[in-house]
Length: 371
Image 1 (cartoon, rainbow, N blue to C red):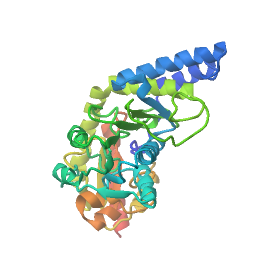
Image 2 (spheres, helix red, strand yellow):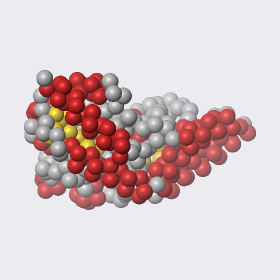
Image 3 (tube, one colour):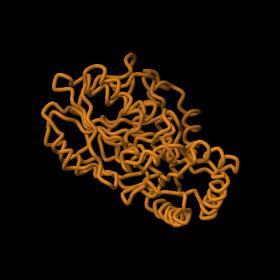
């Protein structure tokens, strides 16, 4: 029983079928001038148009990457290096993925100033504090629309309006945990990152949306590709499979949301009967992620105890390097909860029976591990 969907999702049969068919049918490099290359380029353009239409953006604003981590790194480094003459002030939150926080730590060593906007008790950005933090030399505000650990949904539209008052600053949103789960809008958003493998697509392909009028220094130089901002042979089968995954996730979003919401309510109700469990997710968390802490038990200990029953959960973000959850600490201000947090991520593929089994085994293992 898999409950780690925020880390990655299993690829859907339909998406995999698209990948296989395109791999066999279109063998030419889309940048080659011969007939096979032209055919591949035409199909790639069709896939890109479908993605752009689904996101309601221009095809020229789509940059293919290997995933959200590359997209995030490209934005943070590319924008800051390109526009450092405007200033070196950056604003973010403590809820961000490591592919945002680590590049920012790197930029600090180069003289950039990074500030973390305070959060309200529900985990959302304190908009009043953000307004006071914005400066003429602020060049980037980067905030994930949904936290990968707590599932907190941020007021992206309101944040975008604040940033828009500063024309020298850009607003980047990591929507990796957002798209395909709950409705989204790119209005007032300058740049956006996402990954296919979070929406039942194939690992190794992602998107960076960048408004046309924005320039940035590429992370990868050398060789023609779909844009000048990311070199490398266009991975046509992956691009086509991403278009399929995105279309399917948006077409079925409402139906799948209702299913997950029902499972979340069942899970929360059951967890509240376990005395040792504290729920860290807030009323602003989407139903797909339920973060809990269990007093006196290390997360990795419980993870392996559940694993023995073939139940799979995570300990904070799959890409994190430390045990303590800075995200949980930022929202709860509780060191003990931050050291013992476990995110349980749900999917429309789960059943009520599986959620019931998860809770029952969790109860048993907590009792056993306490002694």
